[in-house]
Image (cartoon, rainbow, N blue to C red):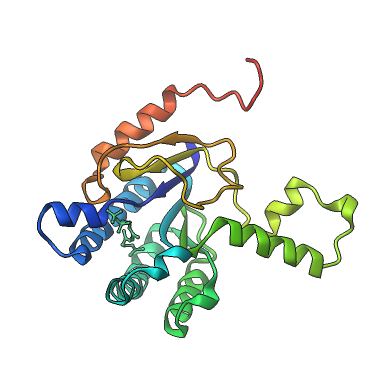
Length: 227
Ligand code: FPP
């Protein structure tokens, strides 16, 4: 079992463009793949934590029409999944700068987190309005505010001050062939195995996911040590 899997969702726009469709169609199709992936991982108990990069702080600079579309898609989705996740014992967390989101979205996020907080199955961490450097700076500020003694500041303590207290990422997938992290969970992915399939996210089916997880099994993880 992979403990913490992360996916940088990428290629929705290019998928749509190649088909002569609007970018929003790519996001809509991507949302379907995302739902399939979450339910597949949950139903088969394949991972304990799943982090998903669905909207970065930089993404706010996209055309207003696209940002509005995505925010609406998130809202509808968060309402829709509540009962399914309760039924499937899935717990939802959010990582990101919530203050940049509209009050309506903030409310739906808080509700979904609260409704699923006692669930003990798959933990889905949505990175939304997320930037890793910002997260690290915010954590540093909180540590200073809490008057933590210098000698008490350890890597472990620092982790507790991030948006969510999650274990390290084991396996990180970025779809669409781009080979970079783009400010995604830099602290948490220090020892992650990286995987960059060429597939655009709307084509990233369960079969593609299975292939990725097979690849992970073949990786030789040494964490800097000699085996
Ligand atoms: C990256 O593709 C995708 C996004 C910025 C949005 C991700 C959103 C979804 C999959 C929608 C559903 C999510 C939820 C939680 C309901 P891109 O637009 O950067 O593609 P491009 O690089 O080809 O332009």
